[in-house]
Image 1 (tube, rainbow, N blue to C red):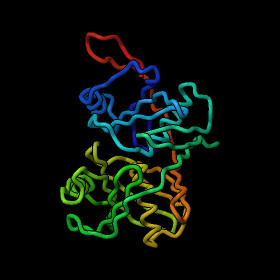
Image 2 (image 1 turned 90 degrees about the horizontal axis):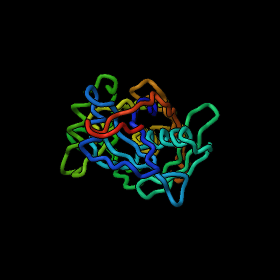
Image 3 (image 1 turned 45 degrees about the vertical axis):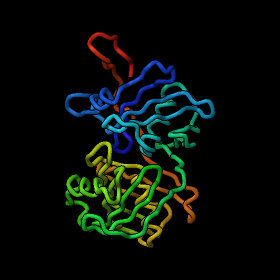
Length: 264
């Protein structure tokens, strides 16, 4: 599936028959030699919600919240037989709500942000920090279109003094009172992705907090060319991520040469 260009391997694991190693997940996510994806998502049973989402980064490690993944797993749940348009699901022990809109996009309610850090210097950049379910660095870059996001993002992401556990790095430019151009280097993928949902939320909230963004419905143009919307109230208590969630293809992959095929 693709969430505005952020792509994921989706597996219905509600029967709990599948246990994947970090090595296997990383192999499947590897572009060129595997399926190729920014991460892998398991749809699982929940005893308090419609379903649970378990997200793994492309390196095979269990990840934090993924906003684009949350939208994709919502549509995937409906595709796999949960016949609703409004859902409650859990991810990493947190509760989320989502809705499939009439135009096919998915609206995901995010949890309020935390851990905002005001301006600081890292790797020569003036930066800000916020946790929107995943840790994000915000850097305003007038040359966002031509910037070496891989090289510069990797340096910031790996700075041990500020981010011993790593962080996602967003380079952005506010282009209008309600619009932002954004590019993101994601930890776990260890590269620039075509979109990052929690990064879009982070960019919109920090920009509004700093007075750079006037509107509380922000349009974020991501590297795939799609636009993700972030809607929020003044207190950041009600925050919504809105964007596409599309099934790209369905298929099969062999777990090992000696085992039968497993549906994905």
